[in-house]
Amino acid sequence: MASKYTPFEIVITAIIVKDGKYLVTRRSMQKKRFGGKWTVPGGHMETSDFTSYPKETEHYWYNVLEKTLAREVKEEVGLQIDNVRYVTSLANIHDDDGMPSLVISCLVDYVSGEVVLQEEEADKYEWVSLEEAKKYELIDGILDELAMAENVLKTGKIGEWKRH
Image 1 (cartoon, rainbow, N blue to C red):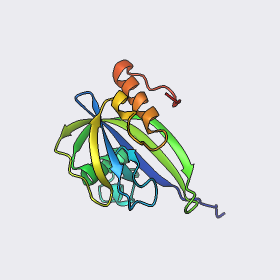
Image 2: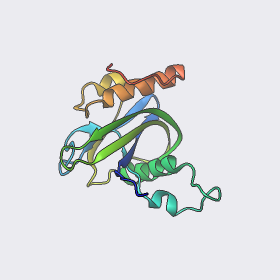
Image 3: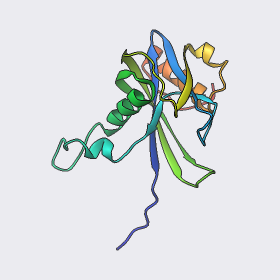
Image 4: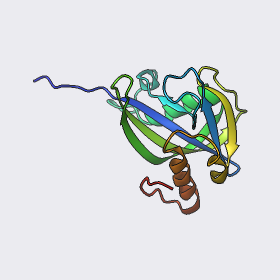
């Protein structure tokens, strides 16, 4: 029996922490969604993010989100990351194309590298504290995610998303 299948784009984002500050980037003005707004690095999971690796078991690939996130961060901002921790998730249906999207937000540790922006993705970056982040025109919800990440760092607990 055939089933109806609704594709989702899967996006994973990195709240990168280095010396108590978070990396925020300003999306390129050419981006069709949120051009000129500040956010955190991340991007779409592609099938090749797992099919280009051997399966860890007979049937499955593991750590696919972590591998996607490492790839996206390296491509977008040139950094190596580690210690991926779940923060929250959100869903959206985009107005421009009706595509449903699932976004998984993670807290990660900076490991190495200097920020080198991928031109078509972002045109500026800053390392900011939670308080400093309030001064930036962030995509709606990002400030709340930063507050959640800070709570994870201070208490080890995730908690549910809420306005901060």
